[in-house]
Length: 451
Image (cartoon, rainbow, N blue to C red; front, side, top):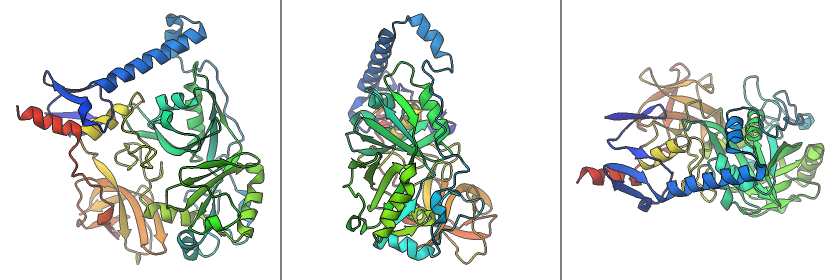
Protein backbone atom coordinates (compact mmCIF):
# COMPACT_ATOMS: atom_id res chain seq x y z
CA UNK A 1 0.00 0.00 0.00
CA UNK A 2 1.21 3.52 -0.80
CA UNK A 3 0.25 6.58 1.19
CA UNK A 4 0.66 10.14 -0.02
CA UNK A 5 2.41 12.58 2.28
CA UNK A 6 2.62 16.24 1.26
CA UNK A 7 1.71 15.29 -2.31
CA UNK A 8 4.58 12.89 -2.89
CA UNK A 9 4.27 9.10 -2.54
CA UNK A 10 5.88 7.33 0.37
CA UNK A 11 5.60 3.56 0.77
CA UNK A 12 4.91 2.29 4.29
CA UNK A 13 2.47 -0.10 5.83
CA UNK A 14 1.79 1.34 9.23
CA UNK A 15 0.13 4.47 10.52
CA UNK A 16 2.22 7.34 11.84
CA UNK A 17 0.26 9.30 14.39
CA UNK A 18 0.97 12.71 15.93
CA UNK A 19 4.43 12.96 14.39
CA UNK A 20 6.93 15.13 16.23
CA UNK A 21 10.29 15.54 14.51
CA UNK A 22 13.14 13.96 16.45
CA UNK A 23 16.55 12.46 16.12
CA UNK A 24 16.06 10.41 19.30
CA UNK A 25 14.88 6.93 18.40
CA UNK A 26 13.95 6.03 21.98
CA UNK A 27 10.77 8.11 21.86
CA UNK A 28 9.40 6.00 19.03
CA UNK A 29 7.49 2.89 20.10
CA UNK A 30 5.50 0.21 18.36
CA UNK A 31 2.16 -0.45 19.98
CA UNK A 32 -1.10 -2.00 18.74
CA UNK A 33 0.23 -2.22 15.20
CA UNK A 34 1.01 1.48 14.89
CA UNK A 35 4.01 3.75 15.30
CA UNK A 36 3.50 6.44 17.88
CA UNK A 37 5.52 9.42 19.01
CA UNK A 38 4.88 9.53 22.74
CA UNK A 39 6.52 12.00 25.09
CA UNK A 40 7.14 14.79 22.55
CA UNK A 41 3.48 14.72 21.51
CA UNK A 42 2.39 15.11 25.12
CA UNK A 43 4.82 17.98 25.69
CA UNK A 44 3.70 19.64 22.49
CA UNK A 45 0.01 19.63 23.35
CA UNK A 46 0.69 20.63 26.95
CA UNK A 47 2.67 23.62 25.71
CA UNK A 48 -0.02 24.69 23.25
CA UNK A 49 -2.78 24.32 25.83
CA UNK A 50 -0.97 26.23 28.57
CA UNK A 51 0.19 28.95 26.20
CA UNK A 52 -3.33 29.47 24.86
CA UNK A 53 -4.92 29.50 28.31
CA UNK A 54 -2.36 32.03 29.58
CA UNK A 55 -3.13 34.32 26.68
CA UNK A 56 -6.88 34.03 27.29
CA UNK A 57 -6.44 34.81 30.98
CA UNK A 58 -4.30 37.85 30.21
CA UNK A 59 -6.86 39.13 27.74
CA UNK A 60 -9.77 38.71 30.16
CA UNK A 61 -11.87 37.21 27.37
CA UNK A 62 -13.94 34.06 27.16
CA UNK A 63 -13.25 30.93 25.16
CA UNK A 64 -16.16 31.84 22.91
CA UNK A 65 -14.65 35.21 22.13
CA UNK A 66 -11.36 33.55 21.26
CA UNK A 67 -13.05 31.05 18.97
CA UNK A 68 -14.74 33.83 17.04
CA UNK A 69 -11.52 35.85 16.78
CA UNK A 70 -9.49 32.88 15.61
CA UNK A 71 -11.55 32.42 12.45
CA UNK A 72 -10.89 36.01 11.46
CA UNK A 73 -7.93 37.10 9.34
CA UNK A 74 -7.78 40.39 11.22
CA UNK A 75 -5.16 40.52 14.01
CA UNK A 76 -6.27 41.74 17.42
CA UNK A 77 -3.55 44.41 17.38
CA UNK A 78 -2.79 45.13 13.73
CA UNK A 79 0.48 46.82 12.85
CA UNK A 80 0.60 48.28 9.34
CA UNK A 81 3.71 47.47 7.33
CA UNK A 82 6.44 50.09 7.64
CA UNK A 83 7.02 51.77 4.29
CA UNK A 84 10.68 52.41 5.07
CA UNK A 85 11.55 48.96 3.75
CA UNK A 86 13.24 48.72 0.32
CA UNK A 87 10.73 48.13 -2.46
CA UNK A 88 11.33 45.92 -5.49
CA UNK A 89 12.54 49.05 -7.34
CA UNK A 90 15.19 49.75 -4.72
CA UNK A 91 18.42 51.27 -6.04
CA UNK A 92 21.38 51.31 -3.68
CA UNK A 93 23.22 54.63 -3.26
CA UNK A 94 26.41 52.57 -3.63
CA UNK A 95 25.68 51.99 -7.33
CA UNK A 96 27.42 55.32 -7.97
CA UNK A 97 30.66 53.88 -6.57
CA UNK A 98 33.57 53.73 -9.06
CA UNK A 99 33.35 50.63 -11.26
CA UNK A 100 29.93 49.47 -10.02
CA UNK A 101 28.03 47.46 -12.66
CA UNK A 102 24.36 46.57 -12.33
CA UNK A 103 23.19 43.03 -13.16
CA UNK A 104 21.79 42.34 -16.64
CA UNK A 105 18.03 42.53 -16.95
CA UNK A 106 16.31 39.43 -15.64
CA UNK A 107 18.88 38.56 -12.99
CA UNK A 108 18.07 38.97 -9.28
CA UNK A 109 19.62 41.63 -7.06
CA UNK A 110 19.00 44.37 -9.62
CA UNK A 111 19.20 47.14 -7.02
CA UNK A 112 22.82 46.52 -6.01
CA UNK A 113 26.17 46.11 -7.78
CA UNK A 114 26.72 42.86 -9.69
CA UNK A 115 30.47 43.42 -9.88
CA UNK A 116 33.04 46.22 -9.96
CA UNK A 117 34.67 45.53 -13.31
CA UNK A 118 36.78 42.45 -12.56
CA UNK A 119 34.52 39.56 -11.46
CA UNK A 120 37.03 36.71 -11.05
CA UNK A 121 39.65 38.63 -9.04
CA UNK A 122 36.75 39.89 -6.93
CA UNK A 123 35.75 36.28 -6.22
CA UNK A 124 39.34 35.42 -5.37
CA UNK A 125 39.43 38.26 -2.85
CA UNK A 126 36.49 36.71 -0.97
CA UNK A 127 38.53 33.56 -0.31
CA UNK A 128 42.10 34.89 -0.04
CA UNK A 129 41.92 38.51 1.13
CA UNK A 130 39.07 40.80 2.29
CA UNK A 131 35.98 41.92 0.40
CA UNK A 132 32.71 43.76 1.04
CA UNK A 133 29.38 43.12 -0.71
CA UNK A 134 26.43 45.50 -0.86
CA UNK A 135 23.33 43.46 0.09
CA UNK A 136 21.30 46.47 1.16
CA UNK A 137 18.31 45.35 -0.92
CA UNK A 138 17.45 42.78 1.75
CA UNK A 139 14.62 43.67 4.11
CA UNK A 140 15.09 43.90 7.87
CA UNK A 141 12.59 43.37 10.71
CA UNK A 142 12.88 43.49 14.47
CA UNK A 143 10.90 41.43 16.97
CA UNK A 144 10.85 42.74 20.53
CA UNK A 145 8.96 41.95 23.72
CA UNK A 146 9.34 39.42 26.55
CA UNK A 147 7.73 36.59 24.56
CA UNK A 148 9.66 37.10 21.32
CA UNK A 149 11.64 33.84 21.48
CA UNK A 150 8.81 31.55 22.59
CA UNK A 151 6.52 33.19 20.02
CA UNK A 152 8.95 32.66 17.14
CA UNK A 153 9.57 29.13 18.42
CA UNK A 154 5.87 28.32 18.13
CA UNK A 155 5.58 29.64 14.56
CA UNK A 156 8.77 28.62 12.81
CA UNK A 157 10.95 25.59 12.18
CA UNK A 158 13.86 26.69 14.40
CA UNK A 159 14.39 26.16 18.14
CA UNK A 160 14.29 29.81 19.19
CA UNK A 161 13.90 29.13 22.91
CA UNK A 162 17.49 27.84 22.90
CA UNK A 163 18.86 30.91 21.10
CA UNK A 164 21.36 32.73 23.32
CA UNK A 165 22.11 36.43 23.34
CA UNK A 166 24.46 37.17 20.45
CA UNK A 167 23.62 33.97 18.55
CA UNK A 168 22.38 33.86 14.96
CA UNK A 169 20.35 31.19 13.21
CA UNK A 170 18.20 30.49 10.16
CA UNK A 171 14.55 29.53 10.11
CA UNK A 172 11.68 28.67 7.78
CA UNK A 173 7.96 29.18 7.60
CA UNK A 174 6.16 26.25 5.97
CA UNK A 175 2.66 25.79 4.62
CA UNK A 176 0.36 23.07 5.96
CA UNK A 177 1.89 20.54 3.57
CA UNK A 178 5.42 21.29 4.68
CA UNK A 179 6.40 23.33 1.63
CA UNK A 180 8.77 26.24 2.14
CA UNK A 181 7.17 29.69 2.13
CA UNK A 182 9.79 31.83 3.91
CA UNK A 183 13.46 31.66 4.81
CA UNK A 184 15.20 34.20 7.01
CA UNK A 185 18.29 34.82 9.11
CA UNK A 186 17.75 35.85 12.74
CA UNK A 187 20.02 37.25 15.44
CA UNK A 188 19.12 37.67 19.11
CA UNK A 189 20.88 40.66 20.67
CA UNK A 190 20.07 42.77 23.73
CA UNK A 191 16.37 41.91 23.85
CA UNK A 192 15.73 42.18 20.11
CA UNK A 193 15.55 39.54 17.39
CA UNK A 194 16.87 41.00 14.14
CA UNK A 195 15.48 39.29 11.03
CA UNK A 196 16.60 39.79 7.44
CA UNK A 197 15.27 38.16 4.29
CA UNK A 198 14.89 38.57 0.53
CA UNK A 199 13.48 41.88 -0.69
CA UNK A 200 10.68 40.03 -2.47
CA UNK A 201 9.69 38.24 0.74
CA UNK A 202 9.85 40.99 3.35
CA UNK A 203 6.30 42.32 2.94
CA UNK A 204 4.65 38.89 3.13
CA UNK A 205 6.83 37.90 6.11
CA UNK A 206 5.91 41.09 7.96
CA UNK A 207 2.22 40.60 7.18
CA UNK A 208 2.24 37.00 8.41
CA UNK A 209 4.09 37.71 11.63
CA UNK A 210 1.86 40.69 12.37
CA UNK A 211 -1.25 38.59 11.84
CA UNK A 212 0.02 35.94 14.26
CA UNK A 213 0.63 38.25 17.23
CA UNK A 214 -2.84 37.93 18.80
CA UNK A 215 -2.24 38.38 22.56
CA UNK A 216 1.47 37.62 22.59
CA UNK A 217 3.73 40.17 24.24
CA UNK A 218 5.71 40.91 21.10
CA UNK A 219 6.07 43.72 18.60
CA UNK A 220 7.15 43.30 14.98
CA UNK A 221 8.46 46.24 12.96
CA UNK A 222 10.14 46.84 9.65
CA UNK A 223 13.20 48.97 10.31
CA UNK A 224 15.39 51.15 8.05
CA UNK A 225 18.55 49.07 8.25
CA UNK A 226 20.76 47.70 5.48
CA UNK A 227 22.92 44.57 5.18
CA UNK A 228 26.59 44.70 4.20
CA UNK A 229 28.55 41.43 4.03
CA UNK A 230 32.29 41.07 4.61
CA UNK A 231 34.13 38.05 3.19
CA UNK A 232 37.67 36.73 3.38
CA UNK A 233 40.29 35.59 5.90
CA UNK A 234 41.90 39.04 6.14
CA UNK A 235 38.75 40.91 7.24
CA UNK A 236 39.79 41.00 10.95
CA UNK A 237 42.96 42.87 9.95
CA UNK A 238 40.93 45.89 8.83
CA UNK A 239 39.06 48.68 10.59
CA UNK A 240 35.69 46.90 10.79
CA UNK A 241 33.89 44.92 13.53
CA UNK A 242 34.71 41.19 13.23
CA UNK A 243 33.25 39.15 16.12
CA UNK A 244 33.87 35.43 16.59
CA UNK A 245 31.67 32.71 15.10
CA UNK A 246 28.34 32.52 16.91
CA UNK A 247 28.70 36.02 18.31
CA UNK A 248 27.06 39.35 17.52
CA UNK A 249 27.97 42.79 18.84
CA UNK A 250 25.99 46.02 18.84
CA UNK A 251 27.21 48.88 16.65
CA UNK A 252 27.59 52.36 18.19
CA UNK A 253 24.71 54.04 16.33
CA UNK A 254 22.38 51.04 16.13
CA UNK A 255 22.41 47.71 14.36
CA UNK A 256 24.89 44.90 14.80
CA UNK A 257 27.86 42.95 13.49
CA UNK A 258 27.71 39.15 13.42
CA UNK A 259 29.70 36.23 12.07
CA UNK A 260 28.03 33.39 10.15
CA UNK A 261 29.49 30.13 8.86
CA UNK A 262 28.29 30.28 5.27
CA UNK A 263 28.88 30.67 2.34
CA UNK A 264 32.39 30.43 3.82
CA UNK A 265 33.91 30.34 7.27
CA UNK A 266 35.11 33.92 6.77
CA UNK A 267 31.81 35.80 6.57
CA UNK A 268 30.55 38.73 8.63
CA UNK A 269 27.37 40.79 8.29
CA UNK A 270 26.89 44.41 9.28
CA UNK A 271 23.29 45.55 9.84
CA UNK A 272 23.66 49.32 9.71
CA UNK A 273 21.24 52.28 9.65
CA UNK A 274 20.34 53.06 6.04
CA UNK A 275 21.36 56.67 6.43
CA UNK A 276 24.86 55.42 7.37
CA UNK A 277 25.22 52.90 4.53
CA UNK A 278 27.66 54.95 2.45
CA UNK A 279 29.64 55.87 5.57
CA UNK A 280 30.16 52.22 6.55
CA UNK A 281 31.03 51.31 2.95
CA UNK A 282 33.63 54.08 2.83
CA UNK A 283 35.12 53.03 6.17
CA UNK A 284 35.59 49.48 4.91
CA UNK A 285 36.95 50.31 1.47
CA UNK A 286 39.22 53.09 2.78
CA UNK A 287 40.79 50.54 5.12
CA UNK A 288 41.74 48.36 2.15
CA UNK A 289 38.77 46.00 1.88
CA UNK A 290 37.96 45.33 -1.77
CA UNK A 291 34.45 46.19 -3.06
CA UNK A 292 32.89 43.21 -4.83
CA UNK A 293 29.46 42.55 -6.29
CA UNK A 294 26.76 39.99 -5.63
CA UNK A 295 28.30 37.80 -8.36
CA UNK A 296 31.16 37.01 -5.95
CA UNK A 297 28.79 36.25 -3.06
CA UNK A 298 26.59 34.04 -5.27
CA UNK A 299 29.60 32.11 -6.58
CA UNK A 300 30.62 31.26 -3.01
CA UNK A 301 27.05 30.38 -2.08
CA UNK A 302 26.53 28.01 -5.01
CA UNK A 303 29.89 26.29 -4.51
CA UNK A 304 28.94 25.86 -0.85
CA UNK A 305 25.55 24.26 -1.69
CA UNK A 306 23.55 26.94 0.09
CA UNK A 307 20.11 27.44 -1.50
CA UNK A 308 18.27 30.70 -1.93
CA UNK A 309 14.50 30.77 -1.54
CA UNK A 310 12.57 31.52 -4.72
CA UNK A 311 15.60 30.81 -6.91
CA UNK A 312 16.83 27.39 -5.84
CA UNK A 313 13.40 26.39 -4.53
CA UNK A 314 9.99 26.21 -6.15
CA UNK A 315 6.47 26.09 -4.73
CA UNK A 316 6.80 22.33 -4.06
CA UNK A 317 10.12 22.34 -2.19
CA UNK A 318 10.23 20.80 1.28
CA UNK A 319 13.10 21.39 3.75
CA UNK A 320 14.82 18.02 3.28
CA UNK A 321 15.15 18.69 -0.45
CA UNK A 322 16.87 22.04 0.13
CA UNK A 323 19.37 20.82 2.77
CA UNK A 324 17.93 23.14 5.41
CA UNK A 325 17.67 20.42 8.06
CA UNK A 326 19.52 21.13 11.30
CA UNK A 327 19.54 23.39 14.30
CA UNK A 328 21.64 26.44 15.02
CA UNK A 329 24.76 24.38 15.77
CA UNK A 330 24.46 22.60 12.41
CA UNK A 331 23.89 25.89 10.55
CA UNK A 332 20.48 24.61 9.46
CA UNK A 333 17.00 26.09 9.48
CA UNK A 334 14.88 23.17 10.74
CA UNK A 335 15.48 21.82 14.24
CA UNK A 336 14.64 18.13 14.51
CA UNK A 337 13.86 18.01 18.23
CA UNK A 338 10.90 20.37 18.28
CA UNK A 339 7.36 20.32 17.00
CA UNK A 340 4.21 22.40 17.06
CA UNK A 341 4.73 24.50 13.95
CA UNK A 342 2.84 24.52 10.68
CA UNK A 343 4.11 21.90 8.24
CA UNK A 344 6.07 20.04 10.91
CA UNK A 345 4.35 16.70 10.27
CA UNK A 346 5.84 16.47 6.78
CA UNK A 347 9.32 17.14 8.17
CA UNK A 348 8.80 14.40 10.77
CA UNK A 349 7.52 11.83 8.28
CA UNK A 350 10.34 12.37 5.81
CA UNK A 351 12.97 12.32 8.53
CA UNK A 352 11.66 9.26 10.38
CA UNK A 353 10.16 7.16 7.60
CA UNK A 354 11.03 8.32 4.12
CA UNK A 355 13.41 10.17 1.85
CA UNK A 356 12.80 13.36 -0.12
CA UNK A 357 11.62 12.92 -3.71
CA UNK A 358 14.25 15.42 -4.91
CA UNK A 359 17.50 16.78 -3.58
CA UNK A 360 19.69 19.81 -4.13
CA UNK A 361 22.91 19.06 -6.01
CA UNK A 362 25.74 20.95 -7.66
CA UNK A 363 25.83 20.77 -11.45
CA UNK A 364 28.89 21.33 -13.59
CA UNK A 365 27.84 22.87 -16.91
CA UNK A 366 29.57 23.01 -20.27
CA UNK A 367 31.28 26.40 -20.21
CA UNK A 368 31.89 26.43 -23.96
CA UNK A 369 28.18 26.77 -24.73
CA UNK A 370 27.10 30.12 -26.14
CA UNK A 371 24.28 30.54 -23.63
CA UNK A 372 23.63 29.86 -19.97
CA UNK A 373 20.60 28.11 -18.50
CA UNK A 374 18.13 30.31 -16.66
CA UNK A 375 16.57 29.79 -13.27
CA UNK A 376 13.58 27.50 -13.67
CA UNK A 377 14.88 25.75 -16.79
CA UNK A 378 14.44 21.96 -16.75
CA UNK A 379 17.25 19.50 -16.15
CA UNK A 380 16.90 16.79 -18.80
CA UNK A 381 17.96 13.14 -19.02
CA UNK A 382 17.41 11.59 -22.45
CA UNK A 383 14.96 14.38 -23.19
CA UNK A 384 12.94 13.74 -20.02
CA UNK A 385 12.63 16.39 -17.29
CA UNK A 386 14.28 15.15 -14.10
CA UNK A 387 14.96 18.40 -12.29
CA UNK A 388 14.97 22.16 -12.13
CA UNK A 389 17.83 24.66 -12.53
CA UNK A 390 18.32 27.20 -9.73
CA UNK A 391 21.22 29.64 -9.49
CA UNK A 392 23.71 29.59 -12.39
CA UNK A 393 27.07 31.30 -11.93
CA UNK A 394 30.54 31.47 -13.44
CA UNK A 395 32.97 30.50 -10.68
CA UNK A 396 36.59 31.64 -10.77
CA UNK A 397 37.89 28.10 -10.08
CA UNK A 398 35.05 25.68 -10.87
CA UNK A 399 33.84 27.18 -14.14
CA UNK A 400 30.12 27.32 -14.86
CA UNK A 401 28.21 25.74 -11.98
CA UNK A 402 24.59 25.66 -10.87
CA UNK A 403 22.38 24.48 -8.07
CA UNK A 404 19.58 22.19 -9.16
CA UNK A 405 16.76 20.21 -7.61
CA UNK A 406 16.84 16.79 -9.26
CA UNK A 407 15.00 13.54 -8.68
CA UNK A 408 16.68 11.42 -6.05
CA UNK A 409 16.76 8.44 -8.42
CA UNK A 410 19.11 10.21 -10.85
CA UNK A 411 22.65 8.86 -10.41
CA UNK A 412 25.83 10.89 -10.75
CA UNK A 413 26.83 9.08 -13.95
CA UNK A 414 23.58 9.97 -15.75
CA UNK A 415 24.24 12.24 -18.77
CA UNK A 416 22.25 15.42 -18.20
CA UNK A 417 21.47 18.54 -20.17
CA UNK A 418 19.92 21.94 -19.55
CA UNK A 419 18.50 24.84 -21.58
CA UNK A 420 16.44 22.87 -24.09
CA UNK A 421 18.93 19.98 -24.20
CA UNK A 422 21.71 22.20 -25.57
CA UNK A 423 24.07 22.44 -22.57
CA UNK A 424 25.74 19.33 -21.17
CA UNK A 425 25.61 18.95 -17.40
CA UNK A 426 26.86 16.53 -14.77
CA UNK A 427 26.23 16.10 -11.06
CA UNK A 428 29.15 16.69 -8.72
CA UNK A 429 29.40 13.37 -6.82
CA UNK A 430 30.47 15.13 -3.62
CA UNK A 431 27.23 17.12 -3.61
CA UNK A 432 24.90 14.11 -3.35
CA UNK A 433 23.45 13.58 0.16
CA UNK A 434 24.19 10.35 2.02
CA UNK A 435 21.05 8.28 2.50
CA UNK A 436 22.74 5.25 4.10
CA UNK A 437 21.57 6.12 7.62
CA UNK A 438 18.41 4.20 8.56
CA UNK A 439 15.79 6.52 10.05
CA UNK A 440 14.42 5.69 13.49
CA UNK A 441 10.87 5.35 12.20
CA UNK A 442 11.91 3.09 9.34
CA UNK A 443 13.82 0.87 11.76
CA UNK A 444 10.68 0.58 13.90
CA UNK A 445 8.66 -0.44 10.85
CA UNK A 446 11.20 -3.15 10.00
CA UNK A 447 11.08 -4.49 13.57
CA UNK A 448 7.30 -4.62 13.38
CA UNK A 449 7.42 -6.55 10.10
CA UNK A 450 9.74 -9.14 11.63
CA UNK A 451 7.29 -10.01 14.41
